[in-house]
Amino acid sequence: MNDFIAEGEIVNIMKALIRCPSVNPPAETTECARVVSEILKKNDIKAEIVEAQPGVANVVARLEGNQSGKRLLLNGHLDVVAPGEGWTVDPFGGEVRNGRIYGRGACDMKSGIAVMLAAMIAFKRSEQPFNGEIIFTAVGDEETGSQFGTKYLLEKGVANEVDLAIVTEPTDLAIELGNRGLRWFDISINGLACHAGRPHLGINAIQHASKIVQAIHGMKFTRQDDRFEIPRPSISVTMISGGTQVNVIPNRCRLAVDRRMIPGETTDSVLDELNEIVTSVTADQPDIDVEIHIRPECWDPYLISEDEPIVGSLKKGHFEVTGEQPLVRTKLACTDASHIFHQAGIPVALYGPGIAGKSHQVDECVPISNLMVATGVLQSVFRDILV
Image (cartoon, rainbow, N blue to C red; front, side, top):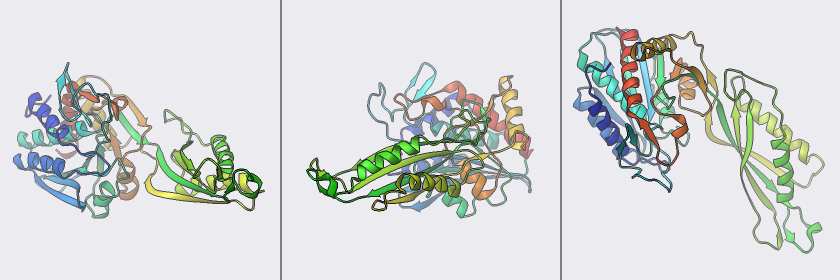
């Protein structure tokens, strides 16, 4: 399965990645990017570190064939969420226990970075003649919107003329054809403060906000796509703040809204729906002022056909390595594949060794067996596409 790279070497790559804390925020990935770059250069693979802003480091590496051919983009992110409390192991220790490697980012998604590195190294060592190019990108700003990570690299033309792509997000070795989308909104409700003993003299922003919350959570969605585990859009008010002290009628209240999207929905369409809901609640209250602001972070929904060549190559590789047909599905969470698909127009599939249910959790871990399978599958994809 992996004739040119041993299990111990892949495990050591994983340990090295986990032992580089790259928590986002603040998305400080300089040291982790340096480790990745050194691993690549040590194996005679061209690599450079690209900083979109100080501290947010991305790695771009290229493995070029003998002549022109297909160009394959590999993508994953170096940044991880904060570890939190309650771990039974050092979250940045890379401990191996019972066939699993533990640490923050083990699933999401330093295991994906590790298998991309391992597969490229093994393919290079095999000295297999090939055409085209493999472009490796390890980015530093995925958890907070990708502005200085994948989106930045795409703007700089890293993926120009790329034919197909794989993002090695945690899929537990399933092939995922797309993901739901996400927009975040902030709603500001502005009323009029007064003494709480004379509430009729003010406009209670929290009271009006509560009506808006109820209306939002009562929204009914008719659009449906059964290819997704949750086939309909969803909307949730996830944060609320307001008031200054207990005896003052609050003149301000702020709501944060999480809106999950399915293919066919756009920023404009979901904003129009939200405006309609707010207007329906406040239409008979001319003195209340409500503003809706769209946060800059965004992930548009996307979905590719199961007939895309990248899907066929992944299916073939998975069967070659495991002797089993892979599960084909979609992802609930948002990923940089959205940007690769929409911004660069590249057919992109998700396939990685991490277990999505372990992501962002205490004692996050990945089975070593999954690392080995995914490394073998990627090598098979290289051969199928480039040889």
